[in-house]
Length: 412
Image (cartoon, rainbow, N blue to C red; front, side, top):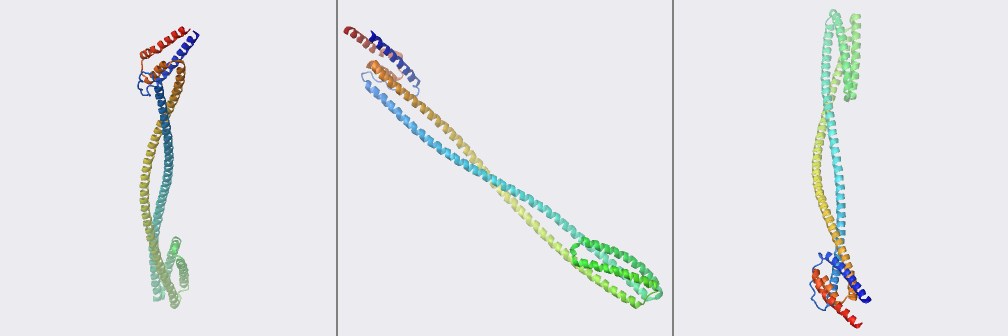
């Protein structure tokens, strides 16, 4: 009785273990294909061989999955390196774009400087035009002053002729001449002041103009001395005509020298005007060259801007392509990781199943009969047997157990 109870307990425990295995088999039945039903017969070694072959096939599949996992890891490494290279290229292109932007800013600053110099040049040209107009005005004033001097000299000549014409009229003419000389001296003083103003405003005439002014001052002093002599002559009741003529001749020579200097001043003024005109022509040529340089700079800046815009568009396309490749790479990486995780989980389940199968097989082979073990293996291999078929197939081993019990009673 002790022996029977012990065997019964072992059978119940083995059945419980097999039920646990069946439940795990049902859980994995979705991923495992259905196996063919092993025909009924006394061939348990063949079924074990089939199971071992299946286990070997699962190991081969695991090895293939591992190789695919290694290959996917290599592809991931290659894609990562490629992504790093593309990122470096994008960084270099970004640096080039920054350098081009700095160059464009420098050219814009240069254009602003050109415009500034152009305004300054226009201002200088305006000043030159004003100076030329003032110079022409001063020349006109000088000619008017020289005309006044000529009229004064003519009046003085007429006065000299009147003095020579008669002694009686000489007194009257001397007084008139003295008054006219005083007036001429006043006008001459004004002319001197005007000439000094011209000398201060028109410094470009140089040393010759200074010498002319000094001679004009000397002439004014001579005129003052002449007026004094006329006054003395009037008080002394007239000097000899020859002395007066000699003095007048000297003064006429002084006037001729003054006219010659005036002509030289005109020539120098014309030369100064020609120099100003030449400078004006040069300034216009410089303005034209600056305008042409400005146009060329603007055209270069436009071409460079178009080139930069094209490069920026290419860079945007490359960045979009890199973003798309990065997204695809991340997607593929996630898929590969999911596949590797599922493969690892399947491998662990298969290993656990293999170990459980070995354990259950050896335990059942030691505790149960071959018929019961064969029925269980057939049920596991089919994966779709119903509880009724299991109950029908278990009737044979129960009968055999009953025979064994009767035999054991008979032996006893």
